[in-house]
Amino acid sequence: MVRPRVHKNAAQSTQAQETERQLKALFLAGLDGDTQCYHAFLQALGGNLRAFLRRRLSNIPDEIEDIVQEILIAVHNARHTYLPDEPLTAWTYAIARYKMADYLRGRYRYEAWNEPLDSQRQELFAESDQEAAQARRDVDKLLSQLPDRYRLPILHVKLKGLSVAETAQVTGLSESAVKVGIHRGLKALAAKIRGTT
Amino acid sequence: MRTHDLIVALVQNLSAVQANAVDKRLNRAQLQGLSAGTVVLVGVFGISSDMPEQILTPGFWLRLAFPLAVVATAVKLVERLVRPGVAVASAWLRTILPIITMMLGTILFILTAPPEFRLKLVSSTSLWSIAIGHTMLLSLPSFIAMIHAMKGLAPTRLALSGAAAGLLAGAQGVLIYALYCPDMPAPYWSALQIAAMFMTTAIGAALGPSCLRW
Image (cartoon, rainbow over all chains, first blue to last red; front, side, top):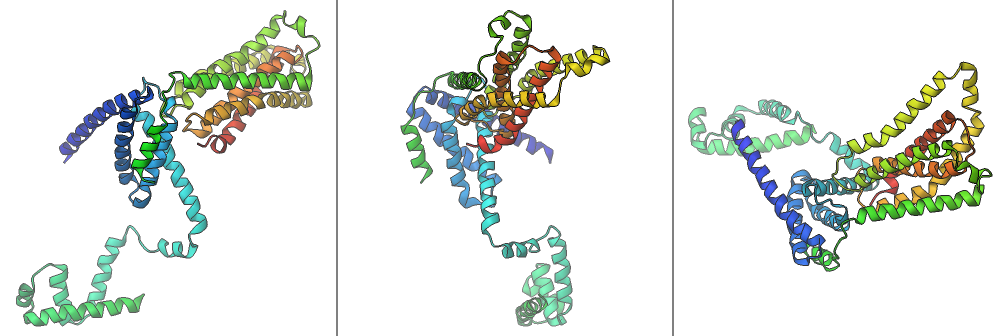
């Protein structure tokens, strides 16, 4: 279990070193006024930032491009603060983290003022970490209220994953009765759920 | 705007960057702050009555040495803080070292003095608050110049950067005030200088997050 992860980390770190080397060469040339290298640097950095932010901010995929642009502008405006002896990764990461935090702070502030509170109140009880365990219990509870001719087909086909033919054999019902049982049983369940909430 | 277009626009106004751009900017800010502070000193307080003679006394130079040491180390600290991703722990340590030394010296001086003289060494509180207030007033131009210079660089640790700017400005204010303030016992002026620097550092830390945002 552990070994592949170590491999992956090692591969990642050599990849990171390679990127650091390439980007640094391009960036330093850009600092001297080489527009082509600087263009290539910003392009490559944009790609790295996009991947980095996508992993971290998967809840706001629409805004990632905005943050990427914010960071690129910041990198451009702060490029005279880079010390050639220092790793470029550390410098860029510090800027990216600062701009990301700044953006998110502004976003939350905006939401706190603008999102209707009632919708947040709904969200508070909408999901919970114990949901999986509770869902299992709820399903069992609801199923137990159904008559056997609905309950058994649903139990075998939908929950245990048997085929319709196998279910017919196990339960002694005909195949069409199994299909009808699933259909009507799900309908009845849906009605019960609507009734209980 | 698409990212590709943004990159093209950024590349278009590309100019070569000078290697020592940060140092230059900070030095200019220091010079501006010090000269503006001196102008305030002469304008508000005038020139000290015992000025020409005072230069010859060793106490005068001793009073200048401490803020000069703090200015020297605090500038190094600021220079690191405005560069993203650079470690600052050792620079902080080096900045605090002269201040701690001075504090210990002051405490030792007061403790070794005979008890009946101690009250005389550290004189009345109203004089204290006036002197500290004057020092802070004199450090205000330095603080504004420093914050302005740092905003054009890239501080990512805003409260820390504000504190460092406050400390640097405070040390400069102390330096300017040392040109004016009358001769007095060493523990008195050293405690006063430390207290003033402490105040400006705290104010800088409080203002940093809002003033230095970029």
